[in-house]
Length: 178
Image (cartoon, helix red, strand yellow):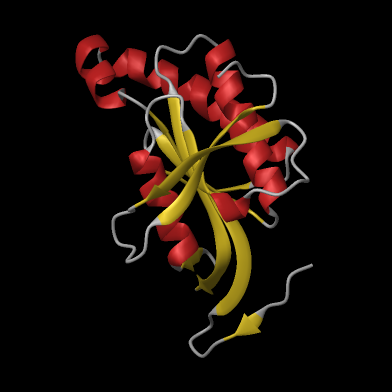
């Protein structure tokens, strides 16, 4: 169990793992197929995210249109949830692939429902950097406890807003062909 440090103004410092996920190409899909079809895609997407997040004990912090921000107390369930969501999206034959970014570390829990800190920002930036069907994370997030996921090193990369390059990995299902 992680320790919690409290700050003035109602904030608390906690360790969490964050994931940002996004349906790649949603704007173009909506433009080409209309709002009705876009809502159908979102329904399948959100159903998959809700189901898997609940099963993996990962919290959906907020919906972001065609994406979401998820929060896990430990890295492993957060990582496994994203890999499961990616697989479910592929299996459901949605026309749009998922992309995701994950990061973990100490953050400030602000006003009980918002997270402030480098881990949140990094997860968001990595989602922005990810290509369709790609899940990016800093190499130091990955542990030997992962059983359904493997990490493929992709090297040190500059991430917007961060002064130093960050060693990144691409996360894939353990049985994925790469």
